[in-house]
Image (cartoon, rainbow, N blue to C red; front, top):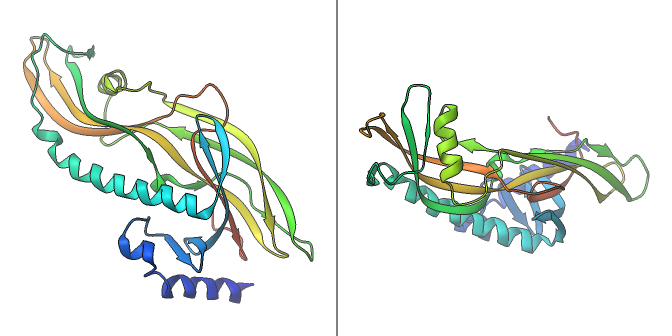
Length: 249
Protein backbone atom coordinates (compact mmCIF):
# COMPACT_ATOMS: atom_id res chain seq x y z
CA UNK A 1 0.00 0.00 0.00
CA UNK A 2 2.91 2.36 0.71
CA UNK A 3 4.11 1.85 -2.87
CA UNK A 4 0.70 2.88 -4.23
CA UNK A 5 0.78 6.08 -2.17
CA UNK A 6 4.29 6.92 -3.38
CA UNK A 7 3.21 6.42 -6.97
CA UNK A 8 0.24 8.75 -6.48
CA UNK A 9 2.46 11.45 -4.98
CA UNK A 10 4.91 11.10 -7.89
CA UNK A 11 2.05 11.44 -10.39
CA UNK A 12 0.81 14.55 -8.56
CA UNK A 13 4.25 16.13 -8.91
CA UNK A 14 4.58 15.17 -12.56
CA UNK A 15 1.14 16.45 -13.53
CA UNK A 16 1.17 19.55 -11.30
CA UNK A 17 1.28 21.66 -14.46
CA UNK A 18 -2.26 20.65 -15.41
CA UNK A 19 -4.59 23.15 -17.09
CA UNK A 20 -6.06 24.30 -13.79
CA UNK A 21 -2.68 24.57 -12.06
CA UNK A 22 -1.15 26.53 -14.94
CA UNK A 23 -4.00 29.03 -14.97
CA UNK A 24 -3.62 29.58 -11.24
CA UNK A 25 -7.35 29.24 -10.71
CA UNK A 26 -7.22 26.46 -8.12
CA UNK A 27 -5.58 26.23 -4.69
CA UNK A 28 -1.98 25.05 -4.96
CA UNK A 29 -2.72 21.67 -3.33
CA UNK A 30 -5.40 20.77 -5.94
CA UNK A 31 -4.18 18.67 -8.87
CA UNK A 32 -6.27 17.11 -11.66
CA UNK A 33 -4.90 13.92 -13.23
CA UNK A 34 -6.93 12.30 -16.02
CA UNK A 35 -10.26 13.52 -14.59
CA UNK A 36 -9.33 12.45 -11.06
CA UNK A 37 -8.81 15.11 -8.40
CA UNK A 38 -6.12 14.97 -5.72
CA UNK A 39 -5.75 17.27 -2.71
CA UNK A 40 -2.37 17.06 -0.98
CA UNK A 41 -1.79 13.80 -2.84
CA UNK A 42 -5.03 12.18 -1.61
CA UNK A 43 -7.85 11.37 -4.03
CA UNK A 44 -11.21 13.12 -3.77
CA UNK A 45 -13.85 10.42 -4.18
CA UNK A 46 -17.00 12.48 -3.66
CA UNK A 47 -18.05 16.04 -2.75
CA UNK A 48 -21.16 17.32 -1.01
CA UNK A 49 -22.16 20.99 -1.06
CA UNK A 50 -24.20 22.54 1.75
CA UNK A 51 -25.88 25.87 0.95
CA UNK A 52 -28.38 27.37 3.39
CA UNK A 53 -28.39 24.02 5.17
CA UNK A 54 -29.40 22.06 2.04
CA UNK A 55 -27.13 19.14 1.04
CA UNK A 56 -26.38 18.50 -2.64
CA UNK A 57 -23.86 16.05 -4.15
CA UNK A 58 -21.50 17.61 -6.69
CA UNK A 59 -19.61 16.17 -9.62
CA UNK A 60 -15.84 16.72 -9.64
CA UNK A 61 -16.30 19.18 -12.52
CA UNK A 62 -18.86 21.18 -10.53
CA UNK A 63 -16.50 21.24 -7.55
CA UNK A 64 -13.60 22.43 -9.72
CA UNK A 65 -15.74 25.20 -11.19
CA UNK A 66 -16.66 26.41 -7.70
CA UNK A 67 -13.05 26.38 -6.49
CA UNK A 68 -11.75 28.05 -9.65
CA UNK A 69 -14.27 30.90 -9.37
CA UNK A 70 -13.53 31.22 -5.66
CA UNK A 71 -9.77 31.43 -6.23
CA UNK A 72 -10.22 34.24 -8.74
CA UNK A 73 -12.45 36.05 -6.24
CA UNK A 74 -9.80 35.72 -3.52
CA UNK A 75 -7.19 37.24 -5.84
CA UNK A 76 -9.47 40.22 -6.60
CA UNK A 77 -10.15 40.72 -2.90
CA UNK A 78 -6.45 40.69 -2.11
CA UNK A 79 -5.99 43.54 -4.60
CA UNK A 80 -8.78 45.56 -3.01
CA UNK A 81 -7.23 45.22 0.47
CA UNK A 82 -4.41 47.57 -0.56
CA UNK A 83 -6.80 50.54 -0.52
CA UNK A 84 -8.32 49.96 2.92
CA UNK A 85 -6.08 52.35 4.85
CA UNK A 86 -6.84 55.26 2.51
CA UNK A 87 -10.63 55.31 3.03
CA UNK A 88 -12.07 58.68 3.98
CA UNK A 89 -13.57 59.25 7.41
CA UNK A 90 -17.16 60.51 7.52
CA UNK A 91 -18.54 63.08 9.92
CA UNK A 92 -18.61 62.09 13.59
CA UNK A 93 -22.37 62.81 13.61
CA UNK A 94 -23.04 60.05 11.07
CA UNK A 95 -21.75 56.86 12.61
CA UNK A 96 -22.66 53.37 13.77
CA UNK A 97 -20.51 52.70 16.79
CA UNK A 98 -20.01 50.92 20.10
CA UNK A 99 -18.56 52.47 23.24
CA UNK A 100 -15.70 50.86 25.14
CA UNK A 101 -14.38 51.09 28.70
CA UNK A 102 -11.93 53.84 27.70
CA UNK A 103 -14.74 55.92 26.11
CA UNK A 104 -13.20 55.33 22.71
CA UNK A 105 -15.75 55.12 19.91
CA UNK A 106 -15.39 52.53 17.16
CA UNK A 107 -16.92 52.77 13.73
CA UNK A 108 -16.70 50.32 10.85
CA UNK A 109 -17.04 51.51 7.23
CA UNK A 110 -17.68 48.51 4.98
CA UNK A 111 -16.47 48.67 1.38
CA UNK A 112 -16.95 45.05 0.28
CA UNK A 113 -19.27 42.24 1.31
CA UNK A 114 -19.52 38.79 -0.27
CA UNK A 115 -19.40 35.06 0.46
CA UNK A 116 -16.19 33.08 0.16
CA UNK A 117 -15.03 29.47 0.44
CA UNK A 118 -12.06 29.06 2.80
CA UNK A 119 -9.67 26.37 1.46
CA UNK A 120 -7.11 27.68 3.97
CA UNK A 121 -9.37 26.32 6.75
CA UNK A 122 -10.02 22.88 5.24
CA UNK A 123 -9.84 20.23 7.96
CA UNK A 124 -10.80 16.62 8.61
CA UNK A 125 -14.26 16.47 10.21
CA UNK A 126 -14.81 12.72 10.55
CA UNK A 127 -13.00 9.72 11.91
CA UNK A 128 -11.22 7.69 9.26
CA UNK A 129 -12.38 4.21 8.33
CA UNK A 130 -10.69 1.35 6.50
CA UNK A 131 -12.43 -1.15 4.24
CA UNK A 132 -11.19 -4.46 5.68
CA UNK A 133 -13.25 -6.48 3.22
CA UNK A 134 -11.81 -8.12 0.11
CA UNK A 135 -14.28 -6.20 -2.06
CA UNK A 136 -15.54 -2.63 -2.57
CA UNK A 137 -17.82 -1.55 0.26
CA UNK A 138 -19.83 1.58 1.10
CA UNK A 139 -18.95 3.13 4.47
CA UNK A 140 -21.02 5.66 6.45
CA UNK A 141 -19.13 8.52 8.11
CA UNK A 142 -20.37 10.71 10.95
CA UNK A 143 -19.41 14.30 10.09
CA UNK A 144 -19.15 17.05 12.73
CA UNK A 145 -18.20 20.53 11.44
CA UNK A 146 -17.98 24.07 12.82
CA UNK A 147 -17.68 27.43 11.07
CA UNK A 148 -16.30 30.31 13.20
CA UNK A 149 -15.80 34.05 12.89
CA UNK A 150 -12.30 35.36 12.16
CA UNK A 151 -10.70 38.82 12.11
CA UNK A 152 -7.59 39.82 10.15
CA UNK A 153 -6.06 41.70 13.09
CA UNK A 154 -6.08 41.31 16.87
CA UNK A 155 -9.01 43.28 18.30
CA UNK A 156 -10.83 43.75 21.60
CA UNK A 157 -14.53 43.11 22.19
CA UNK A 158 -15.74 46.64 21.36
CA UNK A 159 -14.05 47.01 17.94
CA UNK A 160 -15.13 43.47 17.03
CA UNK A 161 -18.71 44.42 17.83
CA UNK A 162 -18.40 47.50 15.62
CA UNK A 163 -17.48 45.21 12.72
CA UNK A 164 -20.20 42.68 13.56
CA UNK A 165 -22.90 45.35 13.62
CA UNK A 166 -21.43 47.37 10.74
CA UNK A 167 -21.32 44.45 8.29
CA UNK A 168 -24.14 44.34 5.74
CA UNK A 169 -25.08 40.71 6.51
CA UNK A 170 -26.44 38.95 9.59
CA UNK A 171 -23.40 38.02 11.66
CA UNK A 172 -23.05 34.61 13.31
CA UNK A 173 -20.02 34.04 15.51
CA UNK A 174 -20.19 30.25 15.18
CA UNK A 175 -22.33 27.48 13.73
CA UNK A 176 -21.94 23.72 14.22
CA UNK A 177 -23.77 20.70 12.88
CA UNK A 178 -23.79 16.92 12.49
CA UNK A 179 -24.60 14.76 9.46
CA UNK A 180 -23.85 11.33 7.98
CA UNK A 181 -22.33 10.84 4.53
CA UNK A 182 -21.59 7.60 2.67
CA UNK A 183 -18.69 6.79 0.38
CA UNK A 184 -17.43 3.65 -1.36
CA UNK A 185 -13.96 2.36 -0.48
CA UNK A 186 -11.90 -0.21 -2.36
CA UNK A 187 -10.56 -3.21 -0.46
CA UNK A 188 -7.88 -1.99 1.95
CA UNK A 189 -8.55 1.72 1.37
CA UNK A 190 -8.92 4.33 4.09
CA UNK A 191 -11.51 7.09 3.84
CA UNK A 192 -12.63 10.21 5.70
CA UNK A 193 -14.35 13.55 5.12
CA UNK A 194 -12.89 17.05 5.12
CA UNK A 195 -14.68 20.40 5.35
CA UNK A 196 -14.05 23.69 3.52
CA UNK A 197 -16.21 26.45 5.09
CA UNK A 198 -18.34 28.87 3.07
CA UNK A 199 -18.39 32.11 5.07
CA UNK A 200 -19.59 35.67 4.85
CA UNK A 201 -16.76 38.12 4.13
CA UNK A 202 -16.50 41.84 4.83
CA UNK A 203 -13.67 44.33 4.39
CA UNK A 204 -13.47 47.98 5.27
CA UNK A 205 -12.00 50.59 7.58
CA UNK A 206 -12.14 50.48 11.39
CA UNK A 207 -12.02 54.01 12.80
CA UNK A 208 -11.23 54.76 16.44
CA UNK A 209 -12.31 58.13 17.88
CA UNK A 210 -12.11 59.65 21.32
CA UNK A 211 -15.24 60.78 23.16
CA UNK A 212 -15.02 64.20 21.50
CA UNK A 213 -15.09 62.65 18.03
CA UNK A 214 -11.42 63.19 17.21
CA UNK A 215 -9.92 60.42 15.06
CA UNK A 216 -7.24 58.50 16.93
CA UNK A 217 -6.63 55.68 14.46
CA UNK A 218 -7.82 54.20 11.15
CA UNK A 219 -7.12 50.57 10.30
CA UNK A 220 -7.90 48.47 7.26
CA UNK A 221 -9.53 45.21 8.33
CA UNK A 222 -11.32 42.23 6.90
CA UNK A 223 -13.32 39.57 8.72
CA UNK A 224 -15.29 36.39 8.23
CA UNK A 225 -18.55 35.27 9.79
CA UNK A 226 -20.28 31.91 9.85
CA UNK A 227 -23.41 31.98 7.68
CA UNK A 228 -26.58 32.30 9.74
CA UNK A 229 -28.52 29.03 9.81
CA UNK A 230 -31.24 27.69 12.07
CA UNK A 231 -29.95 24.11 12.01
CA UNK A 232 -27.96 21.53 10.05
CA UNK A 233 -24.36 21.46 8.90
CA UNK A 234 -22.55 24.78 8.38
CA UNK A 235 -22.43 25.88 4.76
CA UNK A 236 -19.46 24.76 2.70
CA UNK A 237 -17.94 21.84 0.82
CA UNK A 238 -17.53 18.36 2.28
CA UNK A 239 -14.91 16.29 0.44
CA UNK A 240 -14.81 12.52 0.73
CA UNK A 241 -11.10 11.57 0.66
CA UNK A 242 -9.61 8.12 -0.03
CA UNK A 243 -6.05 6.95 0.61
CA UNK A 244 -3.98 3.81 0.98
CA UNK A 245 -2.48 5.24 4.19
CA UNK A 246 -3.83 6.39 7.55
CA UNK A 247 -4.32 10.21 7.62
CA UNK A 248 -1.58 12.13 9.41
CA UNK A 249 -3.81 14.06 11.83
